[in-house]
Image (cartoon, one colour):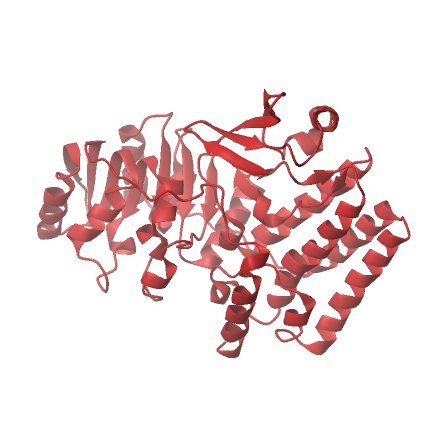
Length: 427
């Protein structure tokens, strides 16, 4: 499916080579009448029947599969397999219901790629093989290497000829035989049985995964700061929350603003995500973001590396950015002036910075922020300052990068497999 254009509020897609108009109408009808399916697929309609063009809303903040935590990987795979089982009841076969075609939004996993369906059961073979190559291969890797070590090489396509070089021969044999048995069922026309068996294999992985949940605690000083932040923001804004302090504000906040939480700690993010799921929180999306365009130009040990990435700016520019300066700033790489220049790119309207009580630093940050914002003020608290600025006067031009793009494609497979093998050897 080809993206024709990505506008401010919607995306147009050419589906002329995917399904006929009649088949798409049947597909839409199934989606509309099945709640379990409908809630996990982006709302889509025809922009032009004659030209076979679909239109769907633009998801404001795209989090890609290479940025998922371990629990996210299990949940998105569960969603994908369950959807495939629902669709097959209507004679519709999944062929691309895979992690990289979903993103996390409003407390749910949302499919935003409509080329994932077929009325030909041959497509199901691609779905099964790719689930093993991507999700199940990732679950096997998690047995021998921690998620944070894999960086953005997570949930990528790994063929069995490469996986055998990464995991034990015993685990590889079980993985391979399960895949071949499911494909055998499919070749014998037992499509539903094949999917059911794949779901059982997934459940074995999922049941062994230990989920830890974030313990959200706060003190009176932080509560006071959080309430001040709420008063500075509009209820209709969206907030890019960078660091643990900002993530805690997102959980505490009484305003319904949509929040994206970015931490560079995978364990924290995974626990935080599980807290969101457990408490059915709809307006927070967490991730460990990765620099997907400027990766090679950035130091590996730089804190919050993705902030300095053009593609991250494109995806996560928000009405407001909230940062604890002492937590996020990295002295090894950027001066405070340069850092403020970078983070200002994320704030369409407002920037809020918490910093420790340091008058010299406050003056330096205030002077720099004035270059980019029209109105600025600071609030003195017992142990901290809260610096806020509104009305961004600078215009940032970002590189033209595919908003819905990702590197989970066959052409990247060899390069990414070699990177994973190297990471495992150095683990």
